[in-house]
View 1 (cartoon, rainbow, N blue to C red):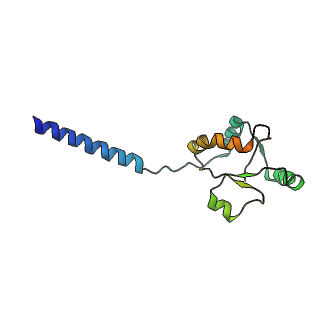
View 2: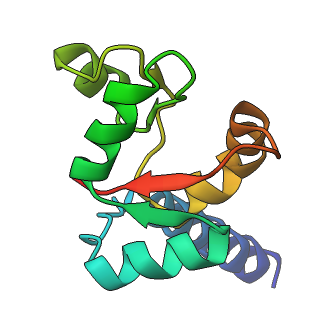
Length: 119
């Protein structure tokens, strides 16, 4: 009877270990964002979408007072970015956006106009 308990416990421990390893080692591939996703996120975040042409006009007129936030990864930012842009790396997943939401709001401030530029 004692051997059966030990065997069952060992099998349960192995099953739990294999299950935990399987769950933690599965890679999660973020799905490609669609235009509908961008529009929905802009609406839920209170952002207004502007085109790159409109950004260029604003940048040309108000370069010093414009806060540009580049949310690409640091290595992407280093390969090229708009002069004066601040790097705020964020993975393209809902979890990353949710976790960094407070930091981004602090960076942007409450009184700023908020825009998302899609390029």
